[in-house]
Image (tube, rainbow, N blue to C red; front, side, top):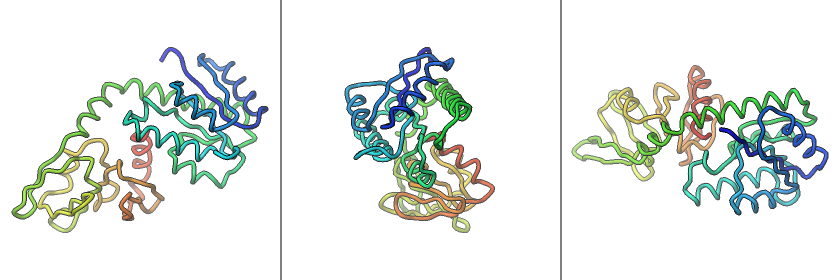
Length: 254
């Protein structure tokens, strides 16, 4: 990427100017925009503004940073565009440490706690730029992956032959000699090993436990012991799988 598009959204002018100044002095030259409210930021994005990295305050006026990120997510879902093409990497800059859980909910990339130092800022900026470079380098692979996600798999459940779109599979559960394929509207018993499903289902599926293979499109949240699916199910996650899962999940949603 030759030129980056940065934005700083904070209702405190001192903070905005500080971060904008650090961005201006950074080795990553590009366009820098400042906003004093989430409403103005969203209006600019609706008008077609491009953003790669967004430094966003949480506590702001009527539309705080969490609400603003939620609105960004709604626009992405409505447009049908990929997250990388339409959403910046969000780094929260806030003085409220107990809202890190909210930041996870809206898929924030980073979190800087006020008062921030230049050293802290530069480290987080470097991490975000490295992530952008990685994503851009994988653009072709991601295109292939998206095409694969539109495909389906066929399996036998008793006397029934089922053709299921990958996106409709919530998770697969190991149950003795068989597996249970959980779809949005049904569950099928299949005499196929979990390892066989792992080989054919692709990058959006992750084995969180010997008994569960989850579709990360349907992961709503997680803790160190459980993964929360969007149908309301809580699935056990192995402590040995947790580090790899968190990395794979952040790669998936980026």
